[in-house]
Length: 408
Image (cartoon, rainbow, N blue to C red; front, side, top):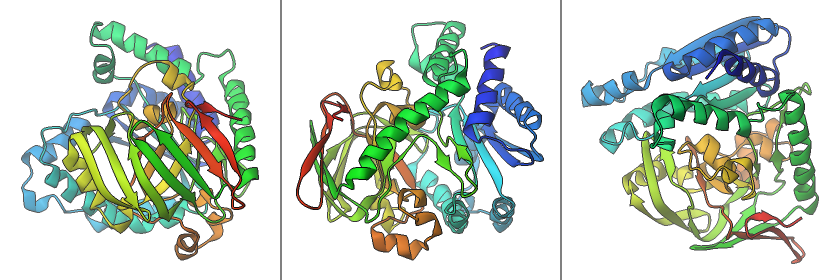
């Protein structure tokens, strides 16, 4: 890590990530491991003309202390004023930047019931805030910051300094920060994703058939579904990049029309634990069975969050040749690993992935097949052996992916 890297990363998150405009309000969330980068992001926001920048920090060890030392009867306490504060920021249209280092399996020893109790309380208390994000006028971006703990996990044979330097190098490459002009590199990448987005939209597939090792799944798409690749656009016409990196094209599966078996091809880092060797069986859109070789209780917790947690809210396509995949590493954080692999998400669907969805009510989107849930959990299903065929309403078929690569 050096100052030039921090400054360049911060500038791209501000100018490409949320594409900060003069007078924008910004909320920056991060953790203590990311503090050097967060300081540079704050400076970049002010230099770009922000009207206000609110910075909120968390710390994994402080979060862990609650589960290790708090009385169980207080784990479900979530004061209403915290939700009120978040609502006021959303009403004022504070655009969001979230930067953190993965916690990995720091919470592996914590009783899953404790984690479920605390997360359910927080999600229930803030569920009503989703409506403020649906119109699409609040820009947001999510990024990861290299840390010693993360670097050690990925490069156990290197010393701390060498491992951290290697991780920074990879993050720079994957996020296109090593280009002479990173902003221009992101624009070119965005144009390539938009071209594929247009192709997928033009064929208006009725359903996709996934086939691979342990996978044979038919996934219908919501009525009026819209593919999203690269940048999103506010109603005022301002583009922003919600995830950095991003290699995916995603849309809305039909919550009631998914059938078959799906096997995950990468571990899942969630709730401070790593779930490995897992898969799901779907019937009429609902998970009816699941298995996992490690931490199956985490999946059970997620699936029991609410009715929508057992249904899909996102279907995303990523070629196996993506820069993240070609690194040959399992990054053990969803932000990176989902950009190495086709994936689905259990839970909440995105309003923007339905034609005109931002202007619809939740009920109107659900009538199209969109899912509603407190959670949104991505899990990876892609790889070099995955084939996907798209079927139109007239029965005609077109290959979408062959052996993990674009077929068009």
